[in-house]
Image (cartoon, rainbow, N blue to C red; front, side):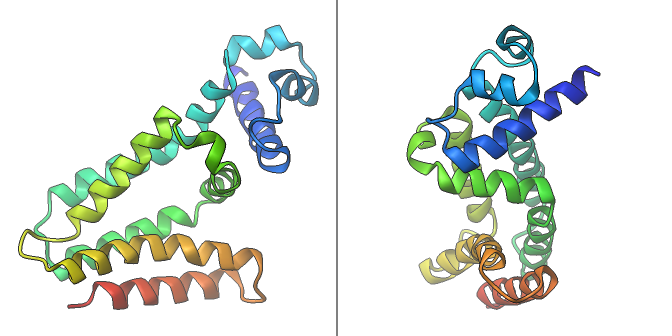
Length: 181
């Protein structure tokens, strides 16, 4: 039951933060939407920052897992292809899309949030892991753009007549072109 309440808080907060903005949403509004007292909400989350951290913790854990995998592999074209495929599958998860939309709409307010700083740092590490020490600057940038290109494709889904599957296939194809030698 506790996890269900926690999950409901996260879902409601994510929706309100995305619709109204992080700074414009209060814990009181989240509690009202949930139908509980502010004190009951405090049992699960003391601050809005705690809610944000809980929303991005899963994303951070996925990136950490992928980073650990990448560190254990030689920096070959095959590794880069598999990393792109793994990351693309991760981005297909519904929860990621909602969190990504929330983060994109609240960039200024969350720019210095500690959990988001960690995600940025891990993403930079992940892009570095795609390239061996002998990689040229052009190769390193291409490898980085492959991962970030996968994100860009998700924004097309919001304003496109293409299906999510068509966008996924196209973004993976573009990412693969960017990592080819």
